[in-house]
Length: 293
Image (cartoon, rainbow, N blue to C red; front, side, top):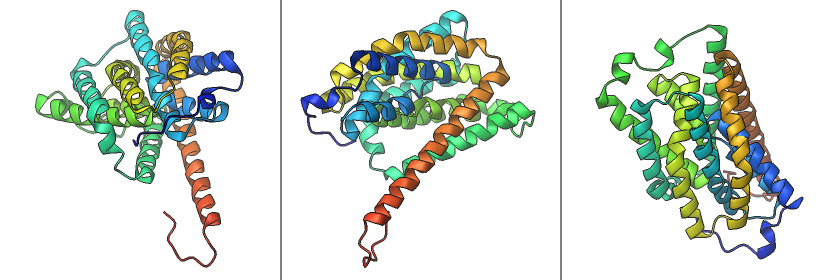
């Protein structure tokens, strides 16, 4: 992600002031705790509406604000009795940390449109898989792409979990949204985790990644220090509530909730891409034959 110029002092001022900021943090915390991350899909549009921050600073602030969500969510999940898949989680945690340190700039060299289409594809596939699980249609052995024997082999688990952690961690640290919505399906499809375990493992994976992302954006000047702190404070009770709710819901109810959320975010992204493309077409000169990206 390119470094942003220092934003004017008044751009971090929110409509509604401190109560609105804490409210946004709380809602983001509930979303992150319930879905194993993904609070940025709420933070970014909410801050876009409430502030005049530049786009890169919106994403950086969302990434920094995720720290309390994943840390408190993972701790609550562990205390309530949630399960963590250390088999895959360790590699993804290490990979995610490295991704936060070094992968973001490499990841941002890929076109933004490609990244958004990949994100939408993962969300739609996740919603489809969960809907089929609810209906009792199991197209994959044990819910995973590969057999249990392959998944339990260190020749598979070590490189694949590291690679997935690196890519997802880079995405989360750089863009500040959707990390959990990528990690949870990955844990289910590639490592055979059930949804509850995938959510808990995802929360733990992003603890060091979120800290690294906060430091990275602070150095680049692509995060509002005051807003980051306020959102993290607001997220504390929300993350606890979200993690407890995730543990209380049974498998079908949680799957239905998660599938609906994935579908909502995917449709929202598709609408945004359509509107952006339409705006580009309208802005292009009528006599221009230049291809619209």
